[in-house]
Length: 171
Length: 434
Image (cartoon, rainbow over all chains, first blue to last red; front, top):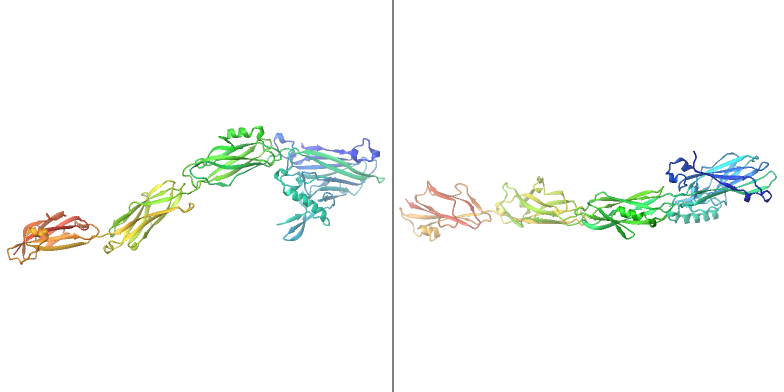
């Protein structure tokens, strides 16, 4: 039995064109699952709690409720304040998509974020640390048929003491 | 030292801005972790374009999780403490820091691995002294004594140190345990080692001692060694000789409290605090009788080299070599009275048939008593002379009497067990001229 699954909701009314602001189903939903809580025996008082150090898996589900196919679908998820992105945790239900990341609050994107580290006075390029990630973005290169769904997942850790990301804002 | 920059290529301005965030984060306290009760909301957006080219922007979805309590206690204390032994009312402070993400409440446990070294007598919390853990924990359990996230409390452990415990360690451990579900437990230990300090004293049982040349006999001098060190420690004991005639003595071996002899001039042994022991040093006087009158110094030193300040003390015996020195004087007189008085001497040559008196005086002018107890130690053999024993030999007038005195076959023999330095013993006897 899976524990810690939290279903989100889409702010559909804020997203649709004015002409379509009627009771239409939401295109984007998010669910969060506490992977750590699901796999760890905890005292009953904490069985459902989310604790620092827990791994949260977010599942974004995009559904095309339009009558026709849609394209240029982009899912953009800023890493929330208090979470540290888990590099390599991103998955998706389709292969025709581009996954990119930002380490500068969405100002720029790349598939492999890097940082420059000064070692013995020399600038060395290294993979960006997990704490540097600010956003993850999926760009579907193909079209999504009516009624079809695209699911994207990533994981993040609830920040523990001294993790800078516990202070980073979520714009 | 490495300096990390979140430098995405061609985006210096952005990474500089991000660095500002990271630098700020590095200066935050541990309480910067995600606090209990924090709601983390993930808001994602989707954009897409329909078949007619209409763009649907910023359609959002969100989900929230609320962070629960995760306890994390950190207990710290000084690594060591060095109180005096004995002493009372010593304190060591334990700091209990709540590194959890919410307020916490703790209970305390405390142990001492050696209660003679560190016997816990109470606890001080918020300036109030609690006699035992039960009363302390009752206070800590009260509603107003929770520890906020990032906050800390201090507990002073009050303890007494027994006598003679210097250098003996005791691990005093304080454990703090959260009372909340999901709480933590942590402990810290301070090693209490009472200061090892104090003095040692050495006292010779005699300031001076007179010894005959050994001639095979070994002498023993005693010293009283007292450890006033605050704990058990090793004393280095070393006998030595000094003086102009030190070479006339040789240290043979040493022993403590009548134990086994240890060859050589030194040994190291453990002394408890307050221990008083007798250290004996055996030596020989190798000088000859001609060295009589010379002195040497036999010293015993005791040093606590493992104790701060290296306390040490010594004392000595002045050993003087002594020996008897005998002189024999013989004179002849006209009468017993003259012989016993030692004067006047016989003035004229005696005629055959005359009776004359001899006086034989033995004087010890040395520094040691003379043993004249051997048979025939003092003799006067006149058997080859033209005289005949007249029947009288006496020491009645001598201040020192012989033990035996007699005549046999023309030989006077005398013995005396001990003739003191400076003393004279004499006897007189009569013979008739043939």
